[in-house]
Image 1 (tube, rainbow, N blue to C red):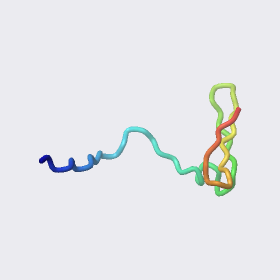
Image 2 (cartoon, helix red, strand yellow):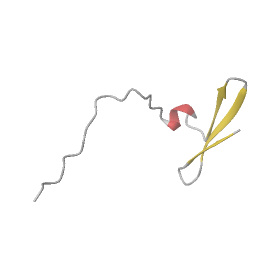
Image 3 (cartoon, rainbow, N blue to C red):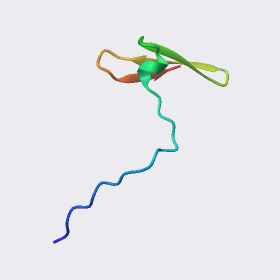
Image 4 (cartoon, rainbow, N blue to C red):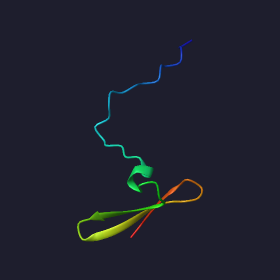
Length: 53
């Protein structure tokens, strides 16, 4: 029988990771600009993220 494979671990990812609470500065909403568009990143009461235009 084969033994279960060990989980893979990776060195620091090349994709940046940002804490939502840091982006919202402890609040519930952060505004994110992409080119000429402004988006709102919201943290819901359930702890989920919603990105809207």
